[in-house]
Length: 195
Image (cartoon, rainbow, N blue to C red; front, side):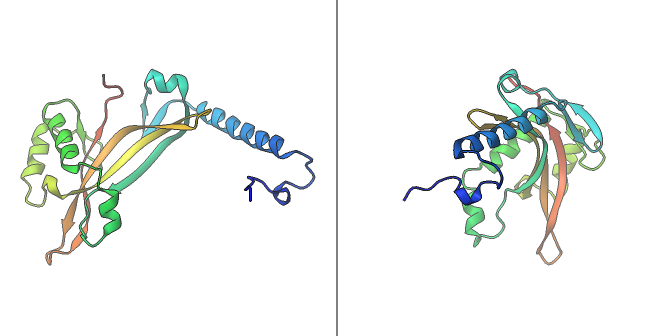
């Protein structure tokens, strides 16, 4: 039995379109929405500040902007060994290498860390102070928050994400050893383009 995308009963009443013409109309409307969303200026809002961003030429020339601000957190450390779903979802992520790369880039002054709440820049000494805090360790970094922009190539539907900032948060625990929550360590803005 052949499955069809639209059944005759699904067609809007009062329209005498053939199925192909109806699909073409829907795709044209979707393309128009994507083009109009691309017309908004290249900016990113962060704590009320406007940050001008410029995607790489290959993205700017071939892709349309579909989301200018996607902000989400990802738990990257499985505290519950019985949680097989989380274990599977993190199996391809080298958390230690990623975190060490960020810290090394800060210490080499390749990227600038910022206070998550105030937005003020942090010094290398501030980061060393954080690392000497008994509550903190790199191994406790268990959540990462990403701020991204998403682009799509409208004919192939190939998507590209451009990450603009990353916030690292570490696990905190109550006196009895139970998990309390995550505390922001710092936020970094990634270079606009890195060769």
